Image (cartoon, rainbow over all chains, first blue to last red; front, side):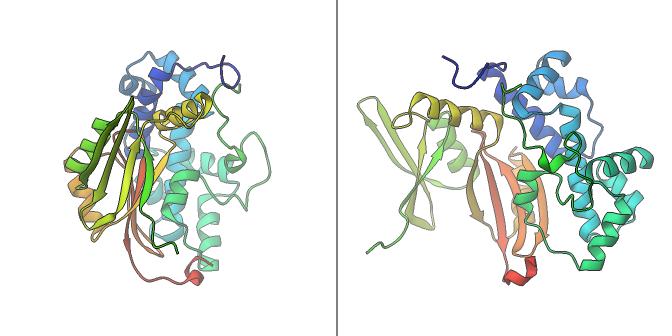
Length: 160
Length: 141
């Protein structure tokens, strides 16, 4: 009777997963780890990771990384901040980790990204669009399906 | 001729909770609340916009079970977008809503069309708040 494929996430759990995801959207600057996020959802860490990934198509920590990188992209486009300041402002504690993750997901370094937008005078992106879509503008990115965030339409739940 | 938009649907999980949130927290006013043979019709409107009723609907007929289930899960997962709301001062409004316990998902930021933020209602919908300003399409180019 399942509507589409197997349902791995009980419907009662979905609002709790939403709470944890909202927490990441709201508090991406703070130190959020799986223990804390699982506590927000009120379930064990392993169950949380499994259900979150089934519901949203990516693990909680990957979602958090994408959220931080999306915020970083927004700041790099328009804010008069150094890359290090942006890195700290969006919740990364290490510039090396920030730059590596940025490059891997966006396809260019944070400073290359900032300079490219500065050179263009940069179009303005609607904030709700950012919110809905997450990491954007991978024009500089090599096409790699496994890492290319924008091509990664969240897999629907149960499709895995 | 068609005069205006008079009714829009906002899906919710619980009509009472939804109405209370929109009325007590966001400042809407209750409008209709009618029980019709197993079906309850609940509407609200903004006090300055009585001509536009928002009906708070639980996913159900005429949606089939698959459709209703889809809406419920989208709400629960937090994927469903509902209203765009105009505000006079987005940053101030967000501070006030935060003080009332509302989750601000996207803090206010300057955009070509104004200052915008995204908040969560208590049913799983996200709502966009915009303090508008004049803009031209070229601002996005």
